[in-house]
Image (cartoon, rainbow, N blue to C red; front, side, top):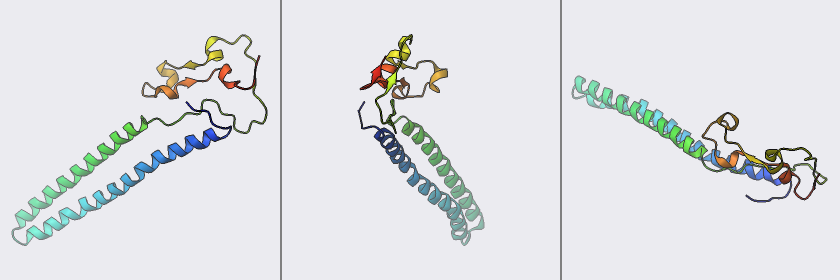
Length: 153
């Protein structure tokens, strides 16, 4: 947890998300290269091995096709698992956003229940968006946090 000047929290959170997204752009280029290689290699194998024996050329075409498709499927599965693991990387969540606020915050906490007053961590899967949601994204700020350096009535 870190305190930043008003309006800077959004910028920091967005920059971290952009950096995480750049990691997967290079993987798409590798996927395109693998796709092109899986299309060219069987054709090359057929032309090269058909000179000696047409049956050998067909067999090599089939082998290279299966190898190319298998490597594509394995790479796509690797990408999906990598993106799921990357989603678990902690990106900051802006709990209290004072963007554009010129005056001290004022909150009337009269009659507020404990969760609204002190904050809460959502545990119900229907509230959290699934059990895969990291704990730091399930934190809900209370009025005591929102009124920091302001007025809590």
